[in-house]
Image 1: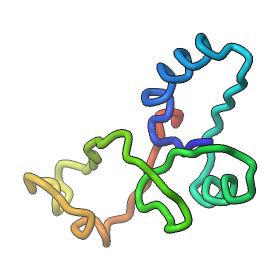
Image 2: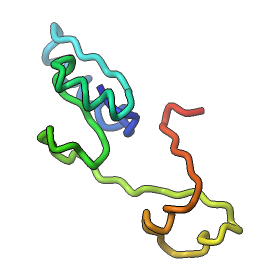
Image 3: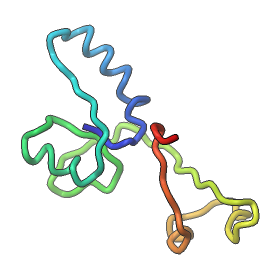
Image 4: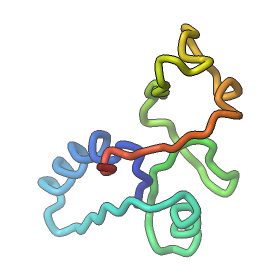
Length: 103
């Protein structure tokens, strides 16, 4: 079970290789929200999950990828001309996030 953290890009090649090596083992890929993702392994419903940081202390984890976070702003937005931004810079800015599956 995975969040929409670009799971297809990171895991599809691994799933293909695993399936050819172990054809009798079933792998299910589900994209779900963080709360359910955290509850499922603790309940024994899944063996592993992939998520974005921060990871709750109840879990052991390994980083598998690091990617830049991009911000889209209107050209006339008050902070659009800055060469770089921090999350603190964006704290008061209304926002939404999308996943690769979003239209």
